[in-house]
Length: 117
Image (cartoon, rainbow, N blue to C red; front, side, top):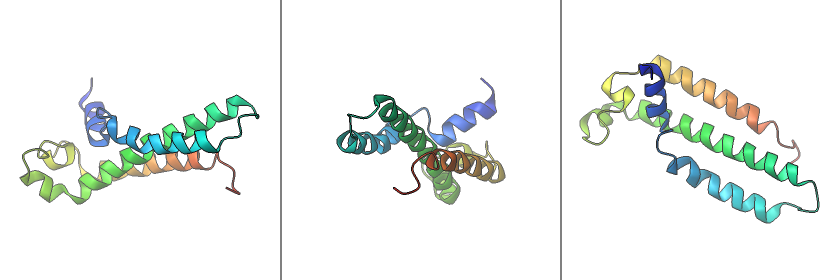
């Protein structure tokens, strides 16, 4: 695996799924309670996929922003000093580029929902 892909996975914490699962869990629970199941079940699955994608994308973007802001602190903490931005493996410009891409993809997911809701 290339170092760029490994850095992206590490900075977005995709290798630690508990974060986006904790974000997705209330979405799936709320959708399950609110969905009118007499309608097409495919719509329910479609919304679940959108909620999952949105959870992964926004959590990933949030992790990058956190690492950018906490870079100086992360360098001093044993647990976080090896994060890509703190260790210098990933520069801030590329990190901001990742944030913009992830937020743009999340916006595309968001506009798939009804504008009136």
